[in-house]
Amino acid sequence: MSAEPRTPLSESSSGAAVVPAAALVQLQRGTPRYDATAYRRKAYWNAPTMTWWERAYLPEILRGLSITTGIFLRNLTRWMTGKKGAITTYYPEERRVDYAPRNRGKHILTQRPDGTPQCIACNMCATVCPAKVIEIEAGFDAKDPAHPKYPVRFEIDYSRCVFCGLCIEACPEDAIRMEPDVPNLASTDRFDMWLTMDDMLTWNPRQDVAKPYPPKGGAPIARGDVSSTP
Image (cartoon, rainbow, N blue to C red):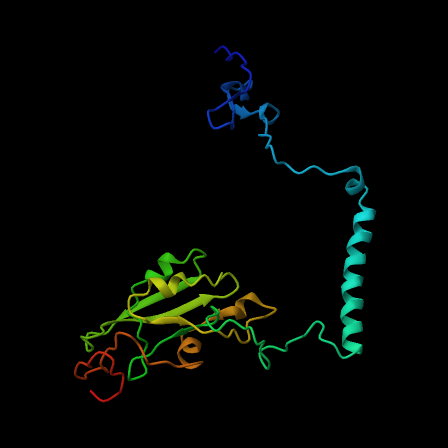
């Protein structure tokens, strides 16, 4: 078998470099191997370049230290003279005045009037989650015709959660919400950052759902009435 002739690299209409067939060189056994030296990385017009001063490294280190030291001395001087400087807030015991009231924090699962989860285990929140951190195991209860499907296990991996709130928007039952606070989030073990269904049901229980279900075996509840009396 004769080897293919080498051709120079070309560019597509979008400007990206195209690796030609010549980049696949033929070995003695006939196994193709990619030739890394034949690839040319695209050069961008706004690629950053370092000056000789930045390449010296030490001057930039000294400049960064001067900025940090200047801010520290400025705040220290303001604190010693009784002026307002850098304020440390000891969260969660203290909260800043400008703390966002609609901050996306810890997840909770809303409850039905009998205390069971409002969730119907449809997996829409787990499907829309971009980080794939929600795990749901569904169960079926034939004795509860109004709410036969329910979550047996509902867990969220907080070590990878990005707090985007897409799970809240995707839920059709108002079964999952995000509270402004995020207590006890930090941990030295990532396996301790799994939020279980019991935690989400009991930490800050809510029953003011937009689509209430009756208790198990009870009569239908009128919309807006979330009392436990059928």
